[in-house]
Length: 180
Image (cartoon, rainbow, N blue to C red):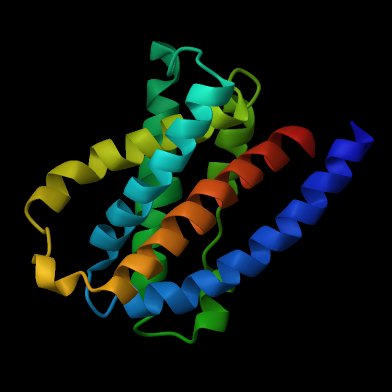
């Protein structure tokens, strides 16, 4: 367990670096997308990676009915509200201040609680699914025109989705389970 903690600490340091680059990539994407659309497309790419890992590593059930409200709370407060505030704040505040102002503590406590009953992959997958499900009605009315999706935007979205959200959330969720 101690060795796994050391690995998790190292991986979290890498995640902090990748999340630092998140601001640069998101700043570009926000020139073409509104904050919630960016979040949707970011998570849409992340879910493919996490779903593939779920198929390979954990084919257990998706989520228990009794945990649905916790997942919805994580999606609304830990993802949708958090990233909406963060991405909106990027227009008004220096990027260095944003991460100091926005706290994610409630999300972490709920995720840690759910981590006792779910594998890392299942927990991450369930959180992504809930967020995408809640954003779907919004994005249906806000889908940008295809010409707005140039290759640079697609690369930004893939980085934000696969690296920052997919890999980053898997590591963060695992760290909340292991390090506690």
